[in-house]
Image 1 (tube, rainbow, N blue to C red):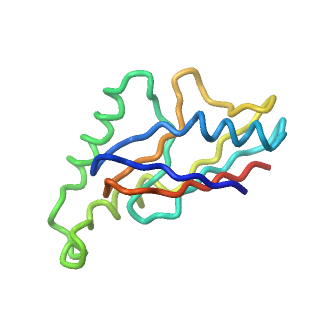
Image 2: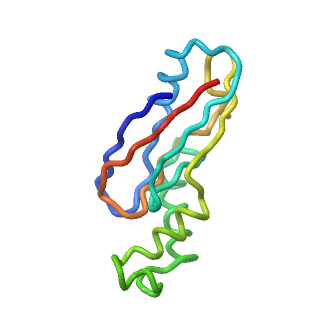
Length: 130
C-alpha cells in the first residue's frame, strides 16, 4: 500500500491524479489485478471521469452545487460544510480500477480524479494494487 498527498487550491475542485496512480501501479510490478484508490476524508471523494475537456469537471461541480446547495444543512451549525459531506458520500471515497499489462485499464477519455469539496486543503490518497 502506498500513499501520496494532493493540495487543492479552491473550495471545489477536481484534480487529475491518474499519472501518480499509474506510477504507483508500475512500481508494484503487478501485471494483472485491481487498483483501489481511496481517500480517507469525509469531504473529498474519488471518481473516474473525463479530464480531456476541463468543462466536464466544471459541469460536474456545477451539477453537484445545484443538486446539493450550500448553507441549509444541520451540520452547517458545526463547521459550515454539510453540503460537502453529502456530496462526498454520494460520490464515494474510492474507485477500483482493473490493471492489465501493468497499466490502469481506463478508457480513452477516463481519468482518476480527486474531488475536493471543502478546500483548499491537503488530501491523502491511498493506493493498493493486487
